[in-house]
Amino acid sequence: MSLSNGRHLVVTSTLGRTVGHGALAGAVAGGLGAAAQYWLVEPSIRAAIAIEEAGAAASEAGDHSHAAADQATGHSHAADVLVSRGEQVIFGMVTVLLVGILIGIAFALVHRFLGSRLPGRTAAGSAMALAGLGFVAFTLAPAIAVPANPPAAGDPATVDLRTLTYLGTIVCCAALTALVTGLARAKDLASESRAAAATAVGIVGTAVLIWALPDAADPVPTNVPTDLVWQFRVGSLTQIGLMWLVLGAAFAYLLPGRGPSRPSSAPADVRRPAMPGVPGQ
Amino acid sequence: MTQSTTAVASGKIATTALSIALVAFALLSVLFLLQENGLLLSPEAANYLHEATHDARHALGVPCH
Image 1 (cartoon, rainbow over the protein chains, first blue to last red):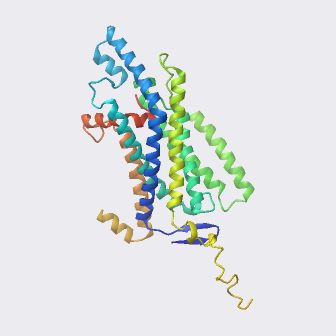
Image 2: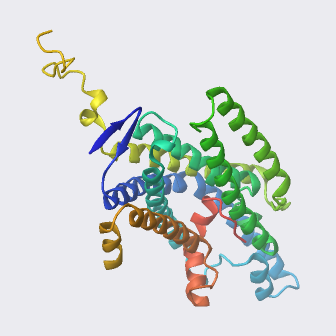
């Protein structure tokens, strides 16, 4: 299934197998992510919705109409809504599972396509490296640019700018990550120039992104405790970080060429002559 | 899926193109799932999807109201 090409394993399984392994690893990551969401993030979402509903009830009691209150919060979480709270929790976990599977498929294909251009000595090592890079570009960078907010803390008026900034950050940071990783492994540069070039581009690129990306994050409303927002953000980052970690590890585990079939990990085979070209030695 | 089977059979470049298409499809599906605002679905269906995926959108850090 795999050939040794210098220092890196080149995996030669079918495209369908790669997609299947990616989907399976993504399902494992998504399943654990859903469990993490239930235990780590849902308590903060519950608390935030309670604050949001208290705010909506207060404005309803005042001179605002119900429609105006609904408009202000974007959507209401009262009992007469489209999807009940219990359903939102379940569907939310199903969504995380689906997102895990889809990201897993994309992850597996990128890993297959980039192959030995990724950092890491083995295919399993490069899967973990890719998961780390994915966490930086797709999770950490947008979390710094537009930090995750619990339900009560977002302003509907700024959602378009926040969404564009979020997607723009992912695109720019994925490109920068690819550039830095590519430079760090460029074959036509001396090893010390590679490190210097990658570091310099990483620092300058990050500075440019910080300067260029709009400051889109909403201020936290006064009725939302900052502790709650902090708890929510830590919970959210933990959940997504766990998903990347499990995705990389599960995909690495599923890779063909792992274990006894890998040439370098079969040293116990004493019947094979150490130097096949020199008989009788 | 007959087209994709043909693409797999016809060599490395087709496989690469198929891979890129699949990656794009997977990422766009994630975007659709979390950010569909009535572009492809009817307003009612989009609203239902928005409410159903509500908790995941917040937890995954995707901007929301």
